[in-house]
Amino acid sequence: MLIDQITACRTVGDAERRLACFDQAATALAKARIDRQMVVLDRGEVRQKRQSLFGLRLPEIQLFGRDEAKEPEIREVRSKVVRLARYGRDQWTVWLEQGGVWRTTEKARFDPEVGQSVRIFKAAMGSFRASFDNNLAVRIERVE
Image 1 (tube, helix red, strand yellow):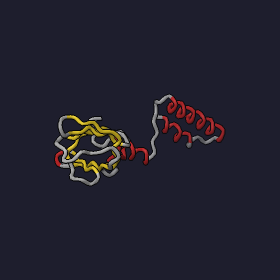
Image 2 (cartoon, rainbow, N blue to C red; image 1 turned 90 degrees about the vertical axis):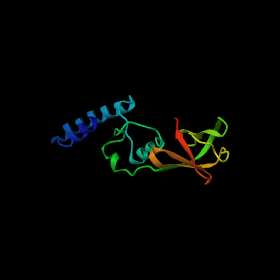
Image 3 (cartoon, helix red, strand yellow; image 1 turned 90 degrees about the horizontal axis):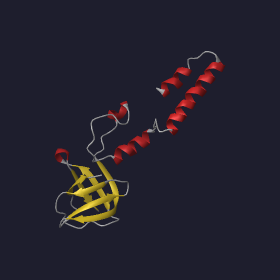
Image 4 (spheres, helix red, strand yellow; image 1 turned 135 degrees about the vertical axis):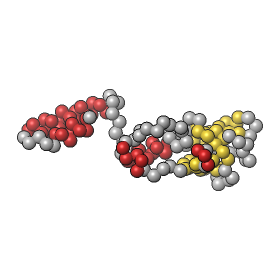
């Protein structure tokens, strides 16, 4: 692995050979990143990406490294509604400011509006609920 190559350079005794090793490993790492063969995220970016995936049904794999299990589970997201489309009589497709498209799965007791704040949170048995501007929550599912 490219990171291991850089780490291994630290053990080279001769300063000139160590520098050459670092240069070669750093060049390979930079090329892999430019060629999109490797993606490097800091912890904040990992949290942001995990939050953007909230509500999607993904396979149980460690997308963000070995320490992913140590991160607290995301139980909710808060955002703003940037677009709406009615479907059926009283159901809505909702686009969120930070990305993601959700669809209500039951009759809404009110009409959501663009610009409203929305809190989407985990509910019973793997379901989700959404509260628009702190109104009563409605069942919702992630579609994109």
